[in-house]
Image (cartoon, rainbow, N blue to C red):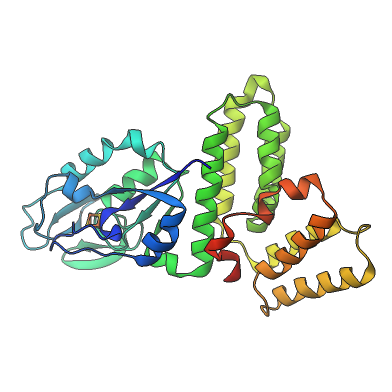
Length: 313
Ligand code: SF4
């Protein structure tokens, strides 16, 4: 498997790049995710030439404009320096499959960053570099390290990274309507677990693909898919997908096995067992009764088992 490259705020890897020369090492990222992702670190403040140590900066609203200025010296305005250095990163940013950002930073924070208006903080800002990512790479999966502590958000982000990487790999070859159809068939059940209406729309988009409109259709499709995957999957939607998969076994397993499967899905619905339990039972039945659609479906094997993500949701 080709390496999956994920961008990351340098301080989260333990690099001593913060304004005070410290770091914000996150061991889940380096020890667990580091086994599956190759990290590309970037510190927009250091890259802007601000040095270590440096005066701390914060976001300040001036009318409609947001500036990044010194906490102690408001004449220290680093807004353009950070924006300019961010724009120079586009070539490698276009190649990566996700980004992990440091929460709360006036450069890297993805949301709820403090913005000072008339000296009073409001928690509704976005760091300047994170804003650059959002504007220029709207499909790129992004998450803050703080939110990776939540099992549902963590699984959602990691799943999006793997799926976006699948898309990038697919696009390394010339895209055909057939390849696009196959990609959709692999990811259809995953999309259903996030948002059933958007999943149906994805089916309609794919149905209209032909050689003459393949590039436009592909762009439309991936925009909808990534938007759909951003919606956090609910247990109710997972139950619908599990029952849908169960339907493929209707004539292939006996009444006792059916009852056990129904009971296991119900236990998941009631929160008594995690999602990995019904999925493992389904995998067991499909090993004996193979079905090409299910075997090919990314829903049954969304990311490496070692990450244990389905054990926690
Ligand atoms: S600018 Fe970003 S990478 Fe650099 S220290 Fe601040 S949060 Fe970390």
